[in-house]
Every structure is written in structure tokens, then in C-alpha cells.
Image (cartoon, rainbow over all chains, first blue to last red; front, side, top):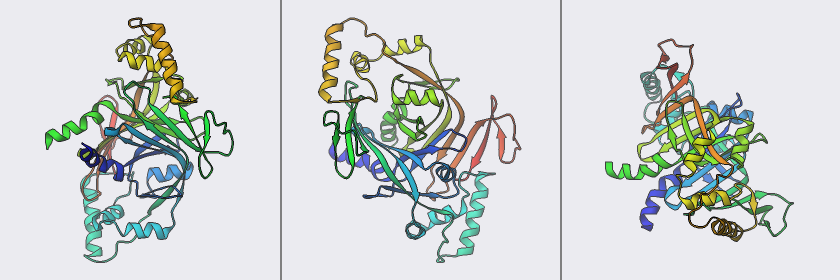
Length: 194
Length: 194
């Protein structure tokens, strides 16, 4: 059973997250994006810098992310702000991707209306012929973002609807040791009603 | 294999969706919410009307939803606006839920900071004792929302990153029969670059 859970969790745990942000028209938008890494600074992902989500983040750097592991009934929610990674970091990661994915990223004007599937295949084939088998795929307008978290909430589902919710947030104030407790490195944590 | 896919899809397909919307501070927020129904009007879900997401939707009724089925590499994204369902619809659905869930909804001041797990259990027990075994659980500040969709996008993942994206949107204009095609009931559809 444990093994089965691990197996099922893998694609979700390692490869997927949902992210969203404002659009310019004042309406939210969301999508699933691959989580590529995390460290003490925060969480990183990569996308097309000309995509709608990149334009949205340019206008408003506030984002929110949710992970969910169905078999465990666990969820993590993150809210924070994005900044672009350096061109070097983006370039390094871009060239680690499968060559077909690199060419695909170059071929596709992400989020633009296109006339047909054939149009995309044609552009892709032109790029393939131009580059041949071995020429390095040039970096398109594409790269990484770092999410610096402001709040992180851990949710554990229970059978009777009284789920557990523990929220961590960056704060130097408000600690009362009754409801709000001091964590490490400037974080406090508190329990929320489910 | 097909059977396994169905089995794995079930909890995602029937029971889960991700929804998000603005917060009052201008930052987005998201979470997983149960999809309870859909018809020609749109998509329905239920929540605590005193929760943070309810307050957010009061301020800005624009929401976005994403579904994702990992084994099929398929995703659906919906953007639209929410309106509250009638009290009758909310009450009817509330009393169809398991009694423990009804009591849990009554006991929990959703999204508020609470001192401990024990606090919640205590409130729940007080309500249980007061109501006894059979008294109807009164409807708390809780009910349904209808999402009226403005755009619906269907995404099908492909192996080479050149995924298929077909977006439907409500529009009476723009149809050129090259990139933008006429659907039914005031919808048009178009292909987006992945």
C-alpha cells in the first residue's frame, strides 16, 4: 500500500503544480506548471516569457500555488511574489531539456491564436531542418521564475470535515504563544479553522 | 490499463477541482474545491459564506478553475463569474451531506485563526450534545455558487511539447473561419500555441 501511494504520488509530487495570478483585465487565470526546484530562497519554475502568464506576472508579481496529493488527502498552498531567474540559470536549464522540447519551445508562440496543428508542425520542421542534428537550439524568449513565499499553508484532510490547517507566514509581530507561535527565520505559525 | 486509468481518475474527475480568485489585498489565492454539479448554466460548488474565498468573491466575482487528469495528460481551464445559488438550493444540498459534515460546517469558523485542535473538537461536541441524535442541523452561513463560464480551454498533452490547446469563448464577433470558428449558442473556438 505504501509503495502504491509512492508510485501514484510521483507524477504529482515531482512534476506538477498549479499556479495562478492576475490578468491585465482584472480576472484571475490559472494553470498547471512543472515545479523544477526549491531551496531556501523559494520555488522555481520555467515558462515562455512571451506567454500570457508571463505578461500577467509582469503586471502583478503576486502568485499563489497549490499542491494536492489525493491518496494522502494532503495539500500545500503557497502565496508569494515572483522574480525572474538570471539568463544564465535559464539557459543552463533550457539546454538540459530533451532536444524535441527545446525545439518545441522555439517553434511555439505560446498563448497566441494559430490557424492549425499543421502550422505548428510546419514551423517545427523548418527549425529542425535549419538546425540539423547537432546545432545548439538557441534560447527563445523563455526562462525561469523564483517564487519567494509569504505564506505556506499545510492542509491535512480528516474524515469528519474538521481538517487540520497550519499556516506559516513571515511576520515579526503578533506572536502571543496562544494562537500564534514563533517559528524559525522570521516565520510564525497558526492553526486555521477548516 | 484502461481500468486502472478509470480507477485512478475517479477521485480527480468526480470529486476535485481547483478554483481561485482575487483577494482584497490584490493578491491571488487558490485552493481545491469539490465540484458538485454542472449543467447548461455552468458549474456549481458549495462553501462557507464567511470564508476568505467567499469574501474574495464578494469583492471580485471573477474566478478561474483548472481540472487536470494526469494519466490522460488532459486539462480543462474555465474562466467566468460567480453568483450565489438560492438559499433553497443550498439548504437542500446541505442536508444531503453526512451528518458529521453538517455539524463540522457548523462548528468551524472557516479561515479564522483558532487556538488548537481541541478547541474545534470541543465546539463540535457541544453542538452534538445540543442537537442530539436526530435534530436537524441548522444551515450555517454556508451555500452554493454558480460559475457562469466565459472561456473554456481544452488541453491535450503531446510527447514533443507541441500540445493541443482549443479555447472556446463567448463572442459574436471575430469569426474568420481561418483561425476563429463558430460553435453553437454564441460560442466561438480557436487553437492556441502551446
